[in-house]
Length: 68
Image 1 (cartoon, helix red, strand yellow):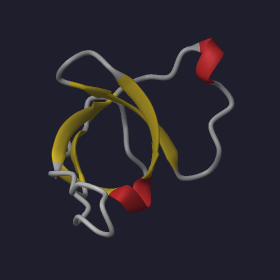
Image 2 (cartoon, rainbow, N blue to C red; image 1 turned 30 degrees about the vertical axis):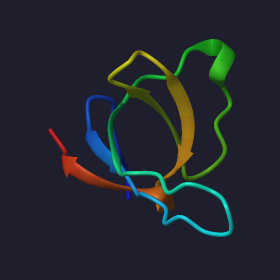
Image 3 (tube, rainbow, N blue to C red; image 1 turned 180 degrees about the vertical axis):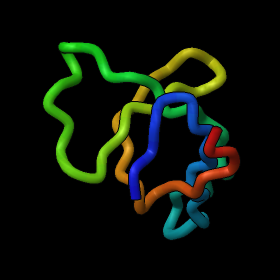
């Protein structure tokens, strides 16, 4: 599946286990990668969180909430 910049996503949460806290699902936005982020491996997208942080995430770790 092809995702374009501007697509709103939600990262999957993870349950708590063996002393590690759980992580709640978090909303993010797929953004256009800059030269320093290239090349991205197949299936990976640069996403930006509400607090401004960015992360490369594989598409198996999120679901699309709004694909404008």
